[in-house]
Amino acid sequence: MTTKSHLFYQTDSRRPVLAEARGIYMWDVDGKRYIDGSSGAMVSNIGHSNPRVLDAMRRQMEKSTFGYRLHFETEPGEKLAAKVAGLTPEGMEKVFFVSGGSEAVESAIKLARQYAVTVGQNSRWKVISRTPSYHGSTLGALALTGYNPLTRPFEPMMQPMPKIPAPRAYLDGLDIDDPATGNHYAEMLERKIIEEGPDTVLAFIHEPVGGASTGALVPPAGYMQAVREICDRHGVLLIHDEVMSGGGRTGRFLGADHWGVAPDIIAISKGFGAGYAPLGAMIAHDRLVEPVLQSGGFMHGHTYAGNPLACAAGLAVLEEIEAGGMMENATRSGDLLKSRLNDLMQRYAFIGDVRGRGLLLAFELVSDRQSMRPLPKELNAHSELVELAYEQGLIIYSRRTRDGVEGDHFLVCPPMITTAAQIDELMEMLTAALDRFA
Ligand code: PLP
Image (cartoon, rainbow, N blue to C red; front, side, top):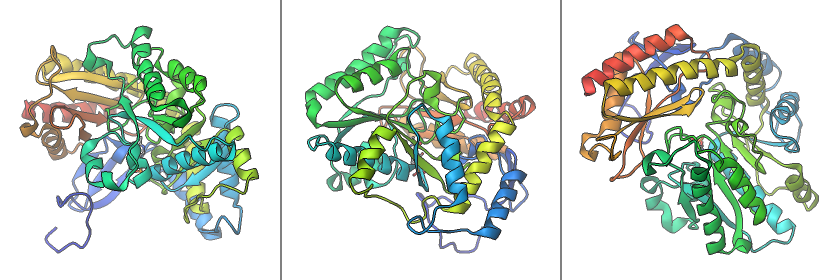
């Protein structure tokens, strides 16, 4: 574009102008076609322009687009909350709508704190999280985020929160399938709780299957269960940040469903609205919500939260996921894509790890597999490879999370409707980009 733009986002680099998007494909105004190989930022889970979702939104728009939650209940809101409650662990029947992931996390920690105050546990306020992690960009969620480049400038404005290492067994040379590995990392949580003083610790938050910060990190055997037990032992609430892993992308509605572990609070967003509407939810166990509501109500809310249009979109998205067997396809296509990414490790020595569940997948670049040392920072591999893929017409998502001393990973997360033939097409583009990178 040559005309002056008044828009700004995170950086000053400009992108082509989007013209239209359908299924797993997107086109810019010059007619170039792209495969949406990361579903945006792991958002467009059911693909673009799904006709039934558009139709449901159109029908809702003709009825009402906004009804303020202090003035009206809405039908789509009630229906969506009931549907979500049916998809979450038993007893987690209270759904609080928001418009995005950071809002969902903010709501989760504020509900946890209000619950503690309500039941006389005033001293509990610390929320332990992991490094690396990403929990959102608002100041509360950012304080939980374990990623210095994003948090550093804002540190004076935030309450520091305790951190423990994420269970990156592949970097520590540990066996992900060995329960001793899960215990090893979970014990770090217990030690941190004791060090901080259990009476001061309110909650532990983590991503069951990691998102952008860890590159689809899958926890080692036994980790999820051990974390649950440790939280219970110390009266610490367990919050699952399923903003990215929730909504079906891993092949189950929630990432934690793979391990059958129920938290006390869940934050979801991204694939929940699937790019059709800004939508997210905080889902909490009744035993937390009831005392808070009885003691005067939850002192928190966002104006657009739970508006009928967003809820109608969310409901239609969930119905489409069910009707289209999309979670099953996420497993099927995810297995295929993962095996194809694993094949790339034979071809390129600089791919050090492939990981993830369902269609939440990533690969990581390293200098050599023995040491798992990252590529030199000056190579700018994370942006370089993304650009090469872009030239091919493939969109992938990258992060350099290991900050200076650490490495580059790439999320390959196409929509849950991706077919085997489309995976071939995606892999052809990715291989061409990697060949040019090599
Ligand atoms: N939590 C996780 C795990 C995320 O991946 C994200 C976004 O990437 C967020 C929270 C914040 O979500 P949002 O960008 O919608 O505010």
